Image (cartoon, rainbow, N blue to C red; front, top):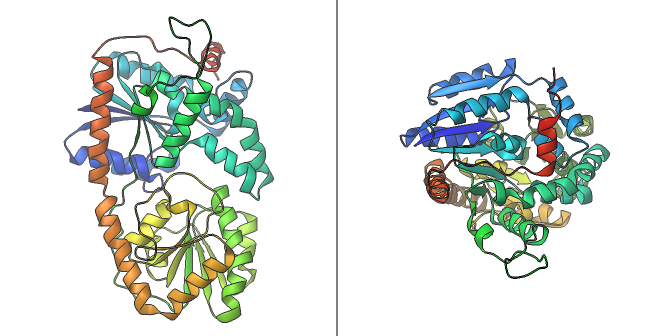
Length: 436
């Protein structure tokens, strides 16, 4: 197939899902043309992608333009997350590629790029929603320690619910990373997309299975060669939590780990160290390093030594959606994992065999201490975690699922040219003056 891949940002090892898809699709013989927003800092990632993509078309969308796009969307129904990259030059680039008629299918990455899909008239479209963002917003309102995150979630929640409910009206197929997110999108569609049957005058909830059939789960993969067990010794009594620390859910988890879980661990093992590894830690996370037993690394070029050298990897998420790459990557490195029960809902992993699960601070502390005190058990769980990822989370298997979704999208259009129906909010945004 020739695939038109649309993204608001450059796929990279940090933005791993589209990056993994593109590389796996290219390995399987498909041609991929990437249209994406890019900045000067994206040069290295683009150089890697040039080796696997047939063509790459980039458009620079500055932060000022993104803010302007969001402000222009405020009077309408378009979620601000989608409005950020709903830029005239990106739309024109997408339209030009669509008119060429050379593509079998278009793959649209995330809600952030979803509105660009409305520029497609000829090409069957698959939206990778990744997660249900409205579900994330709901959980952010309940669990985030950041007033800013809660305010933004509240501002965008209602319009995002309606927008996600209509995904299946505007895209031939929709994929997500976990069954829970698929359930959330189907529930939104069922309750927020009423319809009127030809033989009935009133509007009522749509009971059709059509939406359910067009929403599929394609889980994340892991680069098993890159995230292979490392030839380094594990440090004694060392805990690692990894991720992009500017993300509010990771910030909440880091604070929870150090302030509520670790005092219980330190009561039994005061020498235990905590490594918080990941880019852009906010001041609240950096301040945790005032305790000499806590290290906040900031950006690391390579996270593998920090994870592979730890006794235990923890993922004490208070809230979140989708699949947690931090969990899969630690398991691939054969580091035993203690994760939030919520973080494991998207996995087929077996508790007590592949990883340990917890919810309350004392449960995390008990699991961490158990693995520190029993190196043999820690090694056994780490090895089982690696086997689990090898079985269920290869990028090749994910790409194979994706191929089936692409084929379903192509079959749904049967090659016809049609005009996509716009959401009211999207339609109004299209008529506003272009940013300059």
